[in-house]
Image (cartoon, rainbow over all chains, first blue to last red; front, side, top):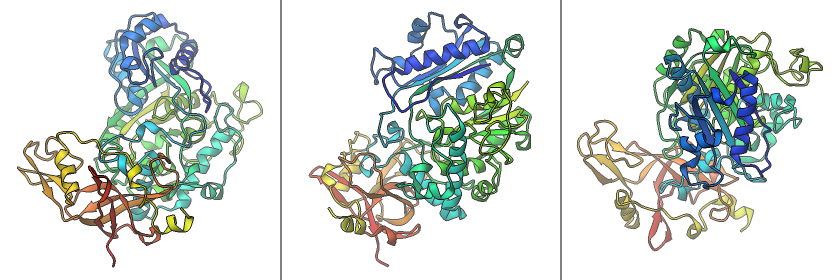
Length: 403
Length: 148
């Protein structure tokens, strides 16, 4: 496996394809592979440069074959969270490689849609639908509706949501690659004192959108063992979708994070052969702090409705049981507007012990493991990463482990 | 527009600026009804299940037989949010109340709450539809509190 991220930034001026190619080149180098090794491709851009934003060229395998100068032998259409470029793509690539259709796959993402200075988060989720558009609904407001209902049903507090945001943003404060590097540290009161976006959510509980790229290259275990990078294996995972997000209202169900069965989570952990207790680091999708509370419940880390007390117990911090969103997450590292590759890439870096932070000798891989200085989880061997888009319910998770 | 005014009834203004619904032939009966002051929802002709948003077939029994049936236009607040940083300041008031209303028929609508002080809104508050005209041809369906 090889991974890479480009600069993540609020600035414009580059094509998404430019970020994607830079990331792909770096991920291939990280793995010790070359582009002609790639057989399967999973790609998401905000646009293909010469065709414009409404043309499907960015999702067209023929365009990619021509641009990369290689034949493409496995290309599943963009679907699921991250338009097929996130954990869904990892699961599909692992399935295709495991079944023998292909030997090596690349997942690439490049986004340049963030408007410098814009207040808006992922404007493309403001569904231009006849029953929605007149209401002024948009991403943060839909998450706010789910958050308030969760507070009502389960007693979740605004301070618990603020603690989520502060914890994640404080990782980003330490990450030299984060868009929000050095902006902290934040207290719960700092998060609460920020202006309201859509109540009860303050702006510091919501991610902005950024420009940048990321890539991951996957191959067979046998081949990976001959490559330079430490071997990280895909142990298993699962995928479930339940409702058309943003078109239908976000409703909480019995689990607190969506109305549908959690059997998919049980099945995915069983497939991976691990339990929650085996996990050392967890990369959730923190587009909004309230969604993290619900993901703990959805993924079975705590009981339905118990996400608030669970986060309040401090599990997400470096010295907590499940260090979470350890690069600063969507809130502080970067958010491309979709749950794309950044969460699993951080999981891989944690497992390899390749974290950049404020430790004096991090460049030599030496970490103090002191909260407030360090982001590297001690002896991380098993990680969970997710792509979870909708405000309630649905997404994918994958379990990754040092092999 | 003073802060005092927007704080008392945020969002119940500037309706003519809002984006117009663009009905399809499939959804035209819904918008015809709103223009007549009726709130209608699809109901399965086979199993009588109410469904929203509109769908070609019933998710319970997959029957494509369905009717647009009048609702009572009343319900309760499932959740709400006072939006401070809205999606488009050229088309929406500075602040407005986005809400999910659970109709008495059991389905949930994304809507706005208007004509009320946000501090009077609670989850579970009783509401009724309060149609607003964007122009002669377009009528939308925010809700307002039923006075206790």
